[in-house]
Length: 392
Ligand SMILES: Nc1ncnc2c1ncn2[C@@H]1O[C@H](COP(=O)(O)OP(=O)(O)OP(=O)(O)O)[C@@H](O)[C@H]1O
Ligand SMILES: [Mg+2]
Image (tube, rainbow, N blue to C red; front, side):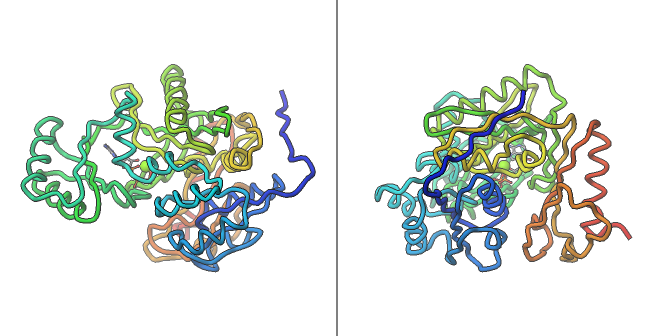
């Protein structure tokens, strides 16, 4: 059955404010145009990816309260490109009556892995074994915590600062008690630290849930994600996993969205361990694991995020191809710009974000659709190899 999308009725155009001008803001702005929404983006730099497509741009840091207030004063609702925000400032915006999505308590959990883990443990969700070390803890207590935890879960250990991590920057695999203790000492000087069991992962999945203001949810099909150095590199749809497990993963993601009371897209990252889904973390915004939804579904994650934030009803989601693969284009070691290697490439499904090229930086992605996962994967990686400057 064809999905009929609700269009905005005539009336004053709503304006959505986006904190941060990266690629997620860029793709939100592109989706906003389709929905007849205006966008104002708070960009740190005038050439940030979203600056060229936003209706209006304000220049300022995400933690510059004056700039945030200026943004809030001009928009109907505020949402985010990233989580590197000051929660006290956001709380002040909410107190002054500004509509902020995904909502303050969701942001509190999504921006702090220790808060997130504690909330999820209290809610009875399956998690890796973990322990939290407080900021400024003394050396003796830290050594005691690491020793005791390693004795119960074994080595190696994963050590993560509670705040500030993204794209695997902030995930430390420690093979020995000494190195784990040292890492925790360093990190605990600036904030709380999460120590967890390093699990043998059978797969990593991500499930996106769009949730609106009334609590209605639309859940996307689970996808398999592959990380390289902690950074998402490839997403494959459909998941070649047991249907029952995938159904459970979707229900779990909806439960998580409900516990958080999130509005907009919530991405739930899951580990599959011993045939069971275990929560890694959530992101309360559009997510790299959902870029494929632009070409691969009838309503992208960006569209449904905006619909929720703008108070529109969510669009139902249908997948439009049998096999879909998204691969990130990541800056090569030479710092080459992928835009220099476009010769002869079909631009369908290719997204370059216009960011200055740097080694290891996400610079774009490509999504290909087809009938056979292996063939689509091969074609996608060939395009990416060309854009990484690896062909010829
Ligand atoms: N406990 C663990 N056991 C095994 N692998 C893990 C564990 N924790 C994290 N990882 C690996 O590191 C990756 C990044 O972890 P996590 O999502 O916590 O960090 P992040 O820096 O917030 O990353 P991102 O923002 O890109 O999702 C995971 O996708 C997984 O591949
Ligand atoms: Mg993650």
